[in-house]
Amino acid sequence: MHVDKQAIFEEARELMREWYPNLYDKPGACLYWNQVAMRTLMIHGFKPLLQAGTMLWKINDDLDPEACNAFGYQWSPEEPLSQAQLSAGLLPELHIWAGLKETNELIDFSTAYFRQIAEEEHRFKWTSPDPPKFIWGKPPEHALYCPTASATMFAWRFILEKQGLSPRENSYATAKL
Image 1 (cartoon, rainbow, N blue to C red):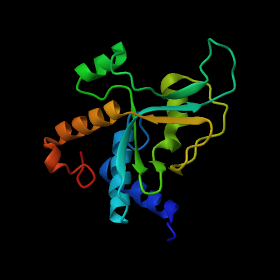
Image 2 (cartoon, rainbow, N blue to C red):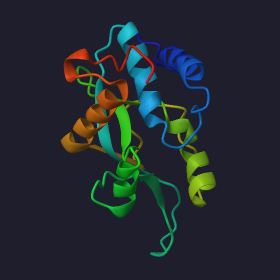
Image 3 (spheres, rainbow, N blue to C red):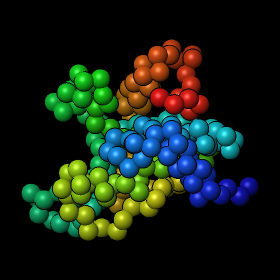
Image 4 (cartoon, one colour):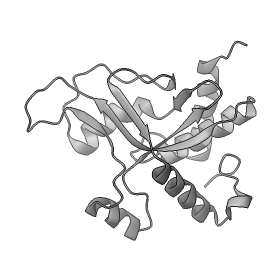
């Protein structure tokens, strides 16, 4: 069966623009990108699984131990920054994406903005090639995606609380947050 991944991505991107126009290219929007990705995938007959955890991208070849050579989000709920986010009712530092169990593929529709976020929000020097517009398959060699059960369960609880639903009433992939 041929899957037009680009067309599905474009459909999800249009839904992102429609549902969340102010979050389209903003840091921390992976929750919303994943939501529109999962919804679009489900419409096309896929059974995506929410995944959350740590994501890192190599951004340069700098070997200076004082320099930053990776950008990402590390699942670390015990860290002070994450604790402050939690106290404010926000997500702690983590990244959210989808997986397809049947094909062992990772799907992240938020990658196009990684460089912009790294440079503008964190003032990192990015000299590596730009990330692709999206990932559907195996991540590039210079990228690390590490899902954890605790991060994934935290993300699900956060989503359900935001919707005011119980786990049996979940509509994450069908209704705006």
